[in-house]
Amino acid sequence: MKKRTLFLIGSLIIMVNVAMAQWVSDPSANTLLAGVDSAYAYGEMVGNSNDSASYLLYYKSTLPKAPFFNLYLQKIDYHGYRKFGNDGILIDPGPNRTWVSGVAVVPNQDSCVYVAYSKVQFYPGPEDTVNAIFLNKLTKNGVKMWGDEGVQISKGSTACSSFSPYLLVTEDNQVCIGYITIDSVGTPIGNFQNVILKKLSATGTLIWEYTFPREFAEFNWGVSMYSTANGNIMAICRHDSTDFSDTSFLQSLWAQKIDANGLPLFAHPKNILSYPKYTGDYPMTMVHVERNSEDGFYVGVAYDQGAVSIQTFIQHIDADANTLFPEPVPVVIDAATDLERADFGIRYLPETQELLVVWAEKNFSTHTASILGQKISSTGTRIWGDSAKELYPKVSMLDSTYAFLTLRKSGINESILFFMKRITSSAAIFSYANKLDPDGNSVWGKTTLLSNKSGNNVALLALEEVGNQWVAYYTDQMDTTYSHLCKGQLFGQNIFNNGSIGVGVKEIVPVLSSLTVYPNPASGNISVDFELETSSNIQAALWSQDGRMIRNWEFSNVSVGKSHLSFDVKGIPDGLYILRLFNGTKSSTIKVMIQE
Image (cartoon, rainbow, N blue to C red; front, side, top):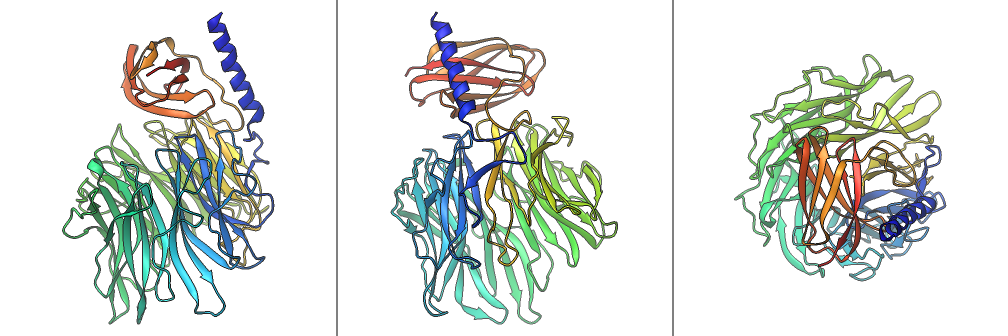
């Protein structure tokens, strides 16, 4: 009788979740994420596995047809509900004529979130502006922990401006912020920029500060940071040196490793990528960094070679930023000057130690568009040939084009590809997702339609997996006069591991055989015995009764037949949980009681 009672309780929980969920199964509807009117601009969104929620940081226009807006934070729970009301929480409490930009938001281990933004306050008079970066910490319930405005990270004045913050929560649950400052003294070809890194404690006090070195005729920009072993941080930024004689530039990527006390571990930042001299606009566009299993990184850059000819290069660095490829590896070999490549993403495949690269390509000679892919080996070989592999066939650009590709991790070696396709004749824009195996083939056997809303200059992004689902979000219409403003609204759509969208959590595959868990109640560790029909990669997750993923694990190449796995559950509060195991085709769940 006791077992039957537990079953009924579990069933009731699922029924309530399905009834109250806000995600929808209709691609023509989707779920409204920000507000109810049409004055929203695009922001940034991250998922937090600690509370199975997503946090959306976005702009709201304060004056019609003017580039002034406030910054808001919204929390979207696992079921698609807006948890902070219709409009979210006001992050910057300034007057109307405020411009906030360069936003960043990251979760920490305690289900809090850090929010950083650069703020320009317009006062009467064109010279009276203040541009400074602020950082705040909010609880999962939306309470600001560092005051209404947060901690001011950089100086604000008419002589110096700061922007483009980048955030990283470190292993010791403190926060690092990197940003750019512009010097007040200009040069014949513009101002020079510094990249500054700071680490703050959980209470907002400064622990250390580091500035990337540069000479007078050099500037640094575009910083990103990554946690490595022993509490160290790998920081990568772009570096330009200037030749005043011909107003040309030499651009490269620099890497510096910094320990937990803020001490640089390299005598000078290491050069990991360089390009020949150029003039005009910056040639290096997107920089994407993917960690490999040895605590090194793959670094991908899109490089504008002039006119309409964008090439993508890959470099592999080890944990000490030493380059492992003799030269950066182009993803394709071509001499064409009429190709445009954009929205590329990279994904490390740990079992084969290969790198999957995808991008959207337009050929202006043939007037065609396609989605292409390439795999790069650990030694720098193009596995799919010099022309890459066609993941989605060519279409006439007179009819349609691809855009806004995002590549996300799924399991150990599979990936979720998100993209948009614009139908030229009707101006309709469709959003899609597909699950790819390591060879670029569809796992689902189909492409899932996420949204078929039409609009102008729509943008699509997608989060990493949180709680066995991904969330894609976009604006439905942009203002063509002020491209950073949205005349429409912000929408989102979830998608599950099997390619379905909408409400509920459903078991859609047969269970694994002979699943047992012990001890139960458990303390410290859980052991699970089960049987597999074939050797498989196993994903396991521990869920609370209210639908929050508490902890997850991954196991590679679990043997066929009877298998045994152990899970560390130390530090998890006492209570009844659900343990779910999934091997890509079959899954099973079992209740676990934890009692420390």
